Length: 174
Image 1: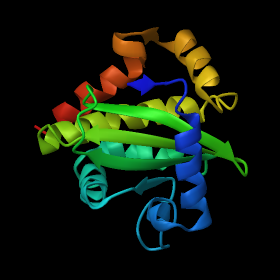
Image 2 (image 1 turned 90 degrees about the vertical axis):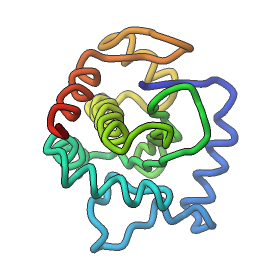
Image 3 (image 1 turned 180 degrees about the horizontal axis):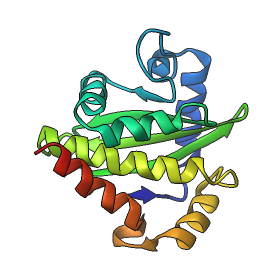
Image 4 (image 1 turned 30 degrees about the vertical axis):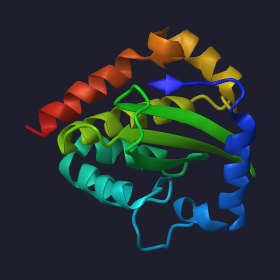
């Protein structure tokens, strides 16, 4: 579920500056060369377990991660215990230095296989953004999703492609 929230930009921007400057949150953006994909990065210990498991167990997730390599999109994945009303979501954090930084959150309040399926769902949204070079902020995301998807529950957008990915990953995990 791709989401935009007005008025959150300053907090997200400050967090991203901390990450890029090498502050405590920088682990999500600074990935050692031997740690796997560089375009999709774990933000916490839970996502550091989820990401390689998802790539190994779902060819669809692996293909979505591979397709982001070489793009200008960098995705940080977070498995969150905080309830936020969705199984997963994606947000644009900022664009800087020729890169677009996204955050995928997956709720820990679901089974491990559902976490993999919703990670795949959100990675599809990341790929939709990667293929739209004009999307650098919330306004660009709204334009893209209005073009390729539909507005849904609580200001979120959805695409048929992301829903198909969810079902495909669920089938792969059976």
